[in-house]
Length: 421
Image (tube, rainbow, N blue to C red):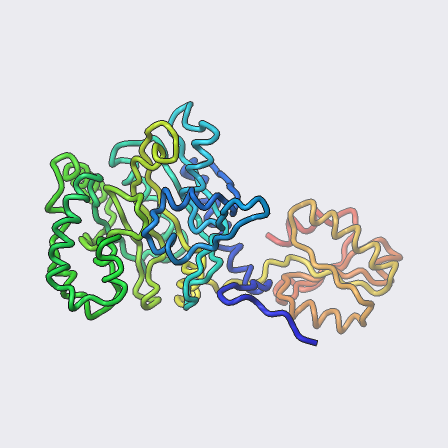
């Protein structure tokens, strides 16, 4: 009989792996709550035209990577390739900015039909933050500060670097594109296939090429910052001043442009040298005008997204995910009657926030103790015939630091409060 297998680019996460996810997710939840951002959840399926209009028809995401199909009503729909646009669609549809600016976060699966490689999958997960209705560089600084704080909490501060740039406003970019295209046309013979395709559609993305043979051409290209007006320059200079004051180190990367059309002014990436070519673990920037483009009243926005798979890969590479099992008690029983009584005690322990694993299967006590030790649990709770007859419970420290104690069952919680501290 043929076995069914995973689709290319997809992943299963078995319990040993989901422990890593839960560990990081719990840090994320504590971190995001400390900044008073609120959760928003949107569908993974949206109208295709939503992404075409906002992300950009000529981007790689829309042009080559989206999972797009017609449903039974013949409407063209797509699995969401990123989270910002879905979030803004929901905000506009529900008039959520009517009462003022909002700070939101989301978390969930995204889908792109890219070539699978280390740290990059066709279903991947992003944790994203969006600050809507704020116009000054101060919110950009807080957004970056949030990331800086998160890396400390995850133990990654020494292994990620901040790169920043400014894209100015729409008119400044259009003016710059003309000069950039003229420069690239002069070097057209040296461009690779991807760059030639982008030359007349999305020329700024050529600057972000990973092709080592094009690095010198891109380094010599005109710089967008030299085409900015005073207002855009002032915004960028104020942001840099704030980052300096917050003691957040950064590198100005004049070739950083991001791959989506909606970005303007501030763009940034947090990168690492530990993962080779897949070194971006977090990226974002400002997208003024996008809310208006989606049919809402004009309001500024800035945000970022963190790739969970990249974070986990980086933490594994650095050895930051080595932690013990979180089982407090492994329940061992001698008979069916003993097991039923043990299950009652286990329910009480769980109601007091202890983690309890109950052994089933009727094996010998010695075999159960072997499995308890192998489970990584801290303690064994034993109910044998003697305990059942005398209304007692035996607790054993599986790490052999506190030995073994038999107590009256009614004293269980008071005993454990003292014994485990």
